[in-house]
Length: 334
Image 1 (cartoon, one colour):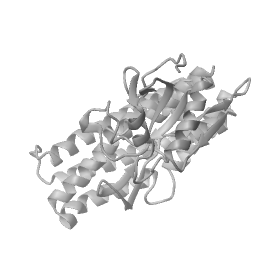
Image 2 (cartoon, helix red, strand yellow):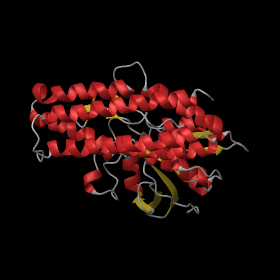
Image 3 (tube, rainbow, N blue to C red):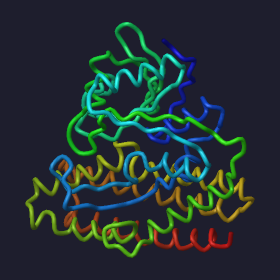
Image 4 (cartoon, rainbow, N blue to C red):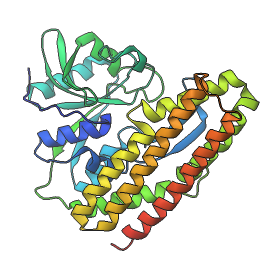
């Protein structure tokens, strides 16, 4: 069983799966547009939740939320299913493949055999598309990979039923209905307003305030926890920022591309200027990641290095606050 499915590489898995599935179903929508309409840009710090023995930091909403919000704002219908056992999950997937329905899956990363070893760790919010099956393998379109690949039947079962936080429980999803026409302008406006609310939220662990909260914690980590644990926390932050679905810096670049596309749809040159500003903020996040990595790899020659990167993070927070207030003022005119 194999459906003729066009693989497009993307920067982030959930955006890429959504874009690829919708293109297959006749709606040509780019990865940045998926990300922006789905309000994919976020920052949240959850010190009471540990991921790989470090406080949880996320640069995106919960798995599935981007596609869910995109579907709601464009008037699409998406079917999602979870399963209690592999047999039912396999039967449902195989039925889709027999009916030429490429299907999105949420999976764990650790046992994805086609991933390089350095990217394989316990993270259960990865997304891919299964578009076919042979006697031994499932045919995989993983949007973060350059080309299509395969997993054996046993390997796919293992990643579909990975254990731990955000356990996927065999989750699969796919479009079942697309409207004849979509209101792209309205969807863009709603997506931007949602992102501005999130990033300017009056909550200490979310958005701009969350970034400042983490900056304050970074100053305390080596004093409170010792250098070894502080370095581990910092390494986990950078991993979530730069390696897990592009994270903080990469998401800013995708959002900049979205604003550029949105400026054309809304015929608003102000958004094009804000796109350039967001690109510059993305560069600041990348600089932060480089400097932080020098610390936990013991390659930094700077004194008082934790306070210095905390200062960098505060500068990023200041820039983002100014940016999102500008963006909010622009989008509230619609």
